[in-house]
Image 1: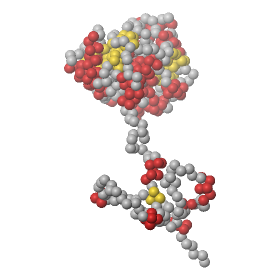
Image 2 (image 1 turned 90 degrees about the vertical axis):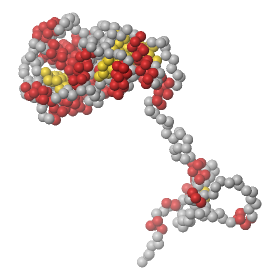
Image 3 (image 1 turned 180 degrees about the horizontal axis):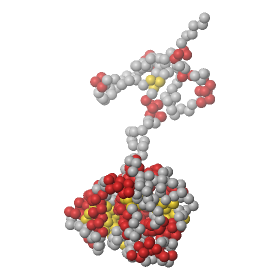
Image 4 (image 1 turned 120 degrees about the vertical axis):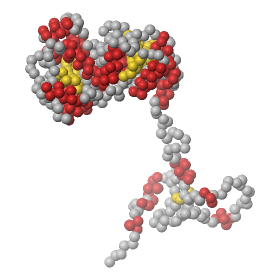
Length: 504
């Protein structure tokens, strides 16, 4: 099947041919015809399968007629990151150069002025991240009542980044008669609920089984010590012993991206850094330098894990095992694209075994080790839970937690009046020093008959003299007889009820 059989307009077919596209990918073959016909589409496909062109080409065909009015765009595309939004804008520049459409890129990290000017002239296509779009809406610079086509790209990444409430807020301002194109690499339950809410009788397209990696990627594990310095040394040794053309080193935290960048730079590697706290101009310059080969290695956070079209990335190194198993698929999806072979290595410490097992379950395959099958300790999974921040269970440490009934009962003694009383401790200076007990004479009969005197205890006239239930915890009690002895409120009678009443 060729692009001419998908219902695209002659202008779009000319642009496709000049761009060098020959045959459509599976997601493009199945998503473009219903999208051109105006139907809602739910597309599920792994990264690197051409999802961007599967909604850009139908939009170009449908937007050939008509013109956008000031501050009322005709189509809206939401992307989770700035890099993905800029990449979609590049697709419109390449494939829509003969359409003369106005494209407004609304992303953070840049000035509002140029974005406001494009919106004021009338933008046919708005490509935005949710946060910056909401900023323009609050400033009164954009109206969404004229949207004809609404695209949500990388919806699972939107969920991970916490953008779902923003998307729901934006969707409430869109016309009910809009066309919605919904694309995601994975389909968790929350994304399925969102798709059911947004889409109306969609054409569901699922190219690959959910949460799978490309077969052209060789995946390996590397056992490393659970020590930051040793882990960095193992990474450098692995990068030297493998023939690496260029590679992306993924870290879970922005702080670790800076540490890895400075470490590799200090040891003579041609490396750059990319993370979310960088200025947008720095991020764009770093990506361009990595694309054209000026830098061979890129230490990055997960902002580079989704949808970035960086051709011919030979290797992926996971310095940290990703927190979410789905992120592993997107990370290694930066290599092995367009039928090329790729290599992905993951550094694994003993505390990462549980996360690796979760990744293998979602991949439905076992990842081999570079040094043979790793021999992890038998209690590695349990130790990984403790190392992840979980302390000992509550109430299990000695000397803590509520006292047992036996200990409470032992500390309370009945006084001579039958009331429970715990004598107060004397001051520290009056406490006798521990001495060896001297032999004493046996008590006399009169002393044995005298009642014991308990200090700091006053008899309570309104309480009935009852034996303490805690004084003898091991003695079986007759609950029936105890209930029979209680009359009315028992010893819980309020004080005001015991006052004498004057009868007239």
